[in-house]
Image 1 (spheres, rainbow over the protein chains, first blue to last red):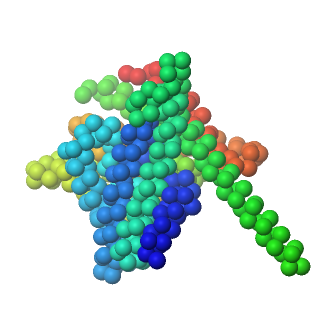
Image 2: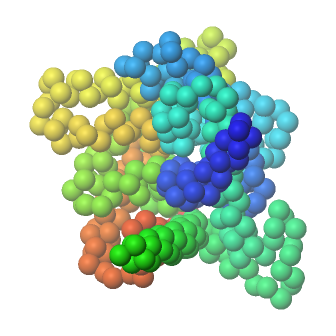
Image 3: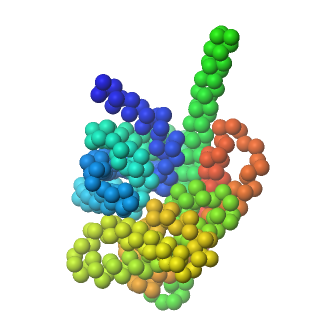
Length: 215
Length: 194
């Protein structure tokens, strides 16, 4: 039962309710750090770590935090973990720390983390909150990697820094530039909407068939 | 830093290194509250107000409190708290003393706490080692750049309302594509780097 619940939460976080591609939260880091897959994985891992820890602590403290000051309390908890992650990255992954720059401290104002604290961790026990943090974090990482895959492949002809497209490919630098970020994300979300539309139509026609049968 | 250098820095952060189109700070409100030019203007003004003030206050707190105490690593935590408190304070002050401005900016103020442009700008001021005057000028100019971007984009979106895109592109994806095209236009300024 528990394992099942975890799998459902994982599927919900990564696909059905993906924080970036479906809920459209946390756009700034999504657009900014997806110039390469390495940065995307680094950012995703940092945000996931913060999300798991903050969800855990907020869920533990949910009975003590007064409702009126809850947002401020959440922000303090989140920014504490962000500072910890920032210092750890500076110590152990200095190149990544340099590449992500200001976007590591800016995890504090990432709406995904505050949204999960408010919508999930403040109402649920500890274990489900940790699972929720993990699945939402993985969903965020998945979305970042998907965008970075296209941007790095088309914009530089490489993946994780390794050339994959051979010398015949003339990189379209526009995909690395800021405008490429908006365009790539726009097309990916359009794809997601397309899939959801077809699914909804399928569900509707199935329902219609069933109604006709009963009639 | 001479006066000309400060002016060039301000000009640069409005057009060349626009916070939204080249650094992606503050994309959430940029994409979220840009559906009408009037709301975009309100948001832009509110951000300008808060960002300039927070630029000044965070600089003072960093150099007068955190540095003497050796607590530089707490800057993220303290800055976000300062910004949240400042937004609350401005909201109360405006409601009490300038009701006209409050009714124009009021609903956008709470949104600003989670606007990463404000925190980002405060952190850039520290990172670049600006002095107090330059910090305030830089914050003000960055906010003007933000306001310019969001108002221009709202104008574009108002025109788009009557278009008939493919069903999958309706709504958010189309907004992103338009933002991409606008970013392309703004990247034309990058030849003017100083």
